[in-house]
Length: 198
Image (tube, rainbow, N blue to C red):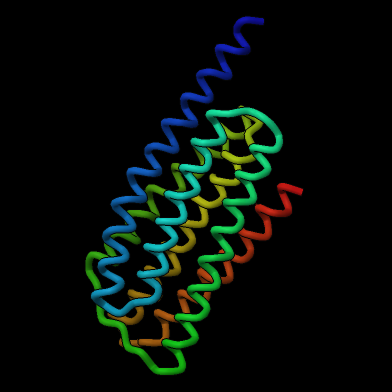
């Protein structure tokens, strides 16, 4: 009987470590991606950076939820994570359509390419660790956050493709198109967060 609470305490500590590691990574990722996106006028990079801000927000929600107990607290946490996806999707859709209509041409960005490539390595590892820990703890909030972390890997792939095609082939439209792909994925993840909550 005593081993179970000890095991839960260990899993909870692992959850905190994973979330604090995510928060540290997201601060660096957001700073590089948003700065690079603004300098290159890249909506895909800026959107990727904003997704990092949302991921940071989601990690703080998980930390808040792990510090307390109760179904109501977890329900609020999962729904807040879902709302962050919808907010990102709305922003990216508006800005991407604007860039496509006005033929806005983003510049190249080596720091942007570097941070998105690094995220393709870091994010899947964090997502798998969060999902396993969340399943072992029975924490819907940590599982929902693992989906958001995995989503960050998808957004990094889409961003890398859009920024890379623009830089290598001069396909200016690939950047806002990548941002629209990210927006679509964000809506899907937001709906899944609300569905899982129900």
